[in-house]
Structure formats: C-alpha cells, structure tokens
Image (cartoon, rainbow over all chains, first blue to last red):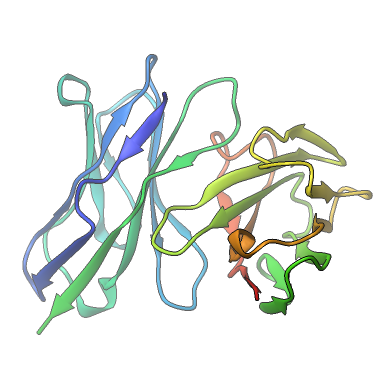
Length: 113
Length: 116
C-alpha cells in the first residue's frame, strides 16, 4: 500500500540544537511528499513540498527536507530549533492521478530551554 | 474570512443521533477536502470535491457518512446514526485550483466531534 511512516512518536530537543524528523515512504512511482506542522489551536500548515527536481527542498520557518530515493526517505531538518517550533509534525505523500494525500501518524516535538 | 472556517468548533452528540458539520472554504477555492483525525493519529482522507461534485469519495467509511457542496463553496459533512467510534476531529481544507498535490491546501481548525 502507498503510505508514509514516521518512526518517532515523540522527540525532545534543546532550544538552539539541530533537528531531524524522519519519514519513510512507500510509493511505486515518484511521489509527491509533504511536511505539515500542527500547532495547538492551529490548523495544519504546509511547511514544504517535493515533486521531482532538486532533492533538497527549502520550506518556510527555516525548515528543509531531503528526498533520498535510495533510502525511501524524506527527512525534515532545521539547523537551530526555536521554542516556537514545538508542535506536531506530519509527513504526507501522494501519487499522480489521485488528488489527495496520505498522512503519517505524526511526530510530536518538544523543545526544552 | 481569510481562512477556512469550520463550525461548530465542538459538537457533543448522543449515540444514534444525526450531525452536520459545516466548512466554509477560502473564497474562490474550487477544491475542498474533508479529513478525519482520531486521537494520536494522522489525518485520514474522507472526500474531495472539485466544484460541486465529489471527485473522490473513496475515504468515506460507510453509508452513514455523506457530504455535499451544492453551490461549489460551503460544504456540509453529514453523519447519520452516530457511533462512539465516530468521535474525532473533522478537518476541512481548500485549495485554489486543481487538488492538493498541485496547489497548497489550507486547513481549518477542525470540528471536534464527541459521541457519548
């Protein structure tokens, strides 16, 4: 089945430290891949999207993600985390012909001083 | 409004009752989505509208669930004979043209449905 998997349910990082959130995908063809963020009381917000082209994608709020076909991964990174980054992060994927995305189960990020 | 608006924000209903959840998309957005997010899970696709018609309703779990978008703007998700397992946050999203693979989708804050 076409899906994305987020192996980490919860991650804690110190403010100012670097961050990497993992996402693995299972799609036959080149997928559309996304990262969304969901903050308390806020709707889901798109951070970035990948579909072909440059495998390193820049997003909003200083986030980036790298598509690695050999590892079936699309990990989200940020060089220096701010307390306001505490939220739940969802990886999502889709494939051509179906205008919908399938979400992973999410990774909750806690940022400590 | 500036964003996707969902009403009510919270709904508590008794098992077996009928409920309607409303979504007001961003003005001019032709694509509209309903997703359901259960506790501790990612959002799960329910249905996708392009204009007035349902382009993909493959995610509706059974015939108790139905959604309409009669004028191509506001959409209503209808759930008959509610069950406790229907308790979740129901999310609506809209995008300008095409679908959410091609154009950014904007999500509302959701309606939290609790069936008691």
